[in-house]
Image 1 (cartoon, helix red, strand yellow):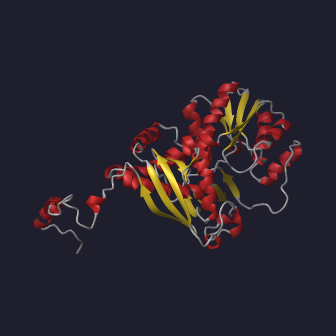
Image 2: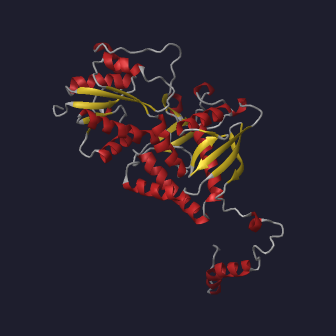
Image 3: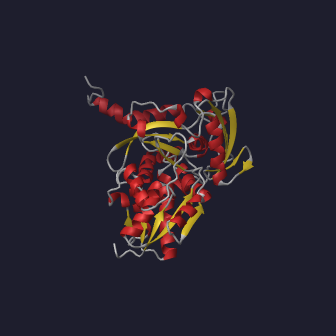
Length: 407
């Protein structure tokens, strides 16, 4: 412990990380630098400054990273149409590599020789933070208090606060029974009653969306403009990446879109039940696949779909900064050079319905695809040879008496 002179802590200003500040000062006898990121979580981050100052912190970083988060992390991930285990839009996972990046950058700026975080020893976030940190600064020391101390309950944390005169802001009113994490892409809910997979989440748990039953009876139409796979305008109004996601969150939430209840497989080995609200991301995924449907070559699209689960697992498991994720990203980004145009979607009672798509780079040729007279654009007689060539190996096998179906 004496080898650590200065540590950069990912600091939220909440109970856990406030305890960690004092615990690091006490147990490592080191200077603590706090870093608080605004990723669009919807809560004011500036109060973290006063809390850190009260704990004797001299170097305090509070940064608005919303644009960088969406531009450099969310948008690249959505170019891949990434879904973990077929459902999860990776809202928590994709925020961690950016936090890890800034932790290391601040450590370099301040001369710190360690970083620290408040993730527990049971979850995925410890893996994501630390894999990112080691990828960006191989020799950095990582301090994970939850794997070292015995303050393993809220009661013990509060007792520690009382013993060390750490101010605790007790929120008035009903305290949420859920563990929540939010950023501009989503908000997650875990723990409490949700630990029973049979329990249906209560309506008042959800923060960003109305229930589909309570959504408007009239549909909302939205036009999204794409350039190289990214949305650059909504209803012909140019927007920055963060503005795009903020707008789609508002529109989607108002129409009951983006709720998800699932049991997922954590990287550390256990199953975990969680609920998520990702209104903007749900719209983005549906619309992106729609614009790709007319602009991507068939085999490119199919190859992307084959590789997507691997890409999603890399993001989920914390390998954003790995060489293989970078390699996949380069391929994905190359595929997006002609993914330009517009998609029109209809938002209605929890559904995202694609109703139109157009692009100057479209590969859809109505003259060939038409059911009407194609004026010789496609010779239907050619299909006979195509079918016979594709049937050749099956005809040979059948001729040898091989049974293609079980008796």
